[in-house]
Image 1 (tube, one colour):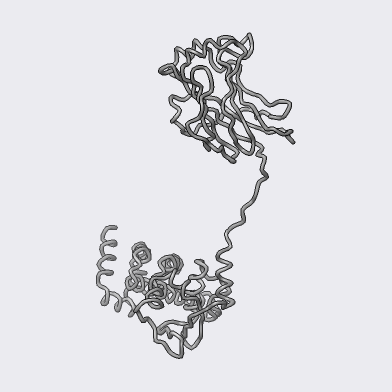
Image 2 (cartoon, rainbow, N blue to C red):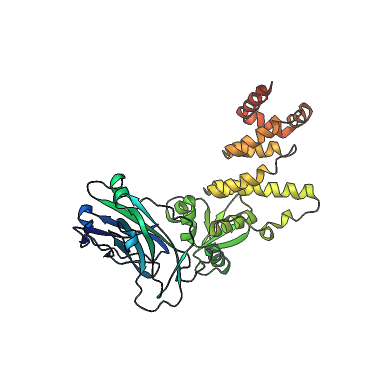
Length: 374
C-alpha cells in the first residue's frame, strides 16, 4: 500500500507537519494518525472532533475525524473515528471504498496491513462520512498495550473498490517486431557479411550490443572474418544458420518454422529429423562462436529432444566439444537407461569408437554411471 501521509495531534489539537506529503494517485494506501498527550484529549467534550490533515488518495481528498470522547451521547467514554470524503465539487458518482482502522505501536511502522473483507461503503456528496462510533473505550485503551508514554497511533488502510480513473490496458512489448522490421527493411544498415555465397546486411551497434564477439570484431582489434569488397566473409558457416543467428540477435526469439532452411523440407520423418538435428548442431556451434548463451541453451534444449540411438553419439560429441554440460548429461542419462543390447549397438559404431578415442573422459563418465546401477 502507498503511504498517504501522517497527522499528529498534540496538546489536544492538530500539530503542523514536519514534512509535506503529496498523497498518492494509487487506489489503495494508508494514513497514520498519531495522538500525543492522550491524557489531555480526555477533557474534550462529547461530540467534539479534532480534524486531521487532509490527504489525497485515488484522485480524491480525504480526512480523518477523531472524537476523543465519542461523537454521540451513547458513545461517550469511547473514541470515535471516521473517514470523510472532502471533494470540493459535487461527486459525479458514489465512490466505493473498503477501509479499516487498526492500532500500531509506532508511527514509523508502516508494514502493509490487510483491509478486512467488509462490504464497501459508498461515499458521495450526501453520504461523505463512514467509520466507527466506538473504535475502543478509553478504559480498554488505557489497559491495552496500544497506549505507550501517553501516546497511541491509528492506521487507516483504504482501498477504493471502484477507482475514479478508468482501467487503462498497457499493450505488450512490441520491441521484437520493431527490431525484426529493422532487419528486414535494411534501413540504416552499415555492415555487410558474405556467408557461403550469400550477402547479409546488418547494424553494427545492434550486433555489438548483443554479442561480445561482434563487439570485438566490429569495434575492436579482433578480426573474425576476411574483409573482401567491403564485406566481412564468414567462413565455416552455412547461410541459413547465419540468417537464423541474425534473427535471434534482433528478436531474441527462436526462428519460426517458415524461416527454417529448405534443407529440412525433405520427405519422411526420419530424414526430416536428421536434417533438423544437423541444422540445430550447426546453429549451436554458431551461437557458441558468437557468445550467444541464450541461443546456445535453446539449441541444447531442442537437441535434447532429438536424442535417440542413432543420434546420441553425434550429439554427445558435440556437447563435449562445445562444453554443453546439460546436453552432455542428457545424453549420458539416455545411454544409462538403455538395455545391454541397445548399448552394445551404439558402442559398435565407427562414430562411437572415434568419440571414445578422442574424448576418453566421456567414456569414463558413462562407465561410472553404469557402475552405479549395479
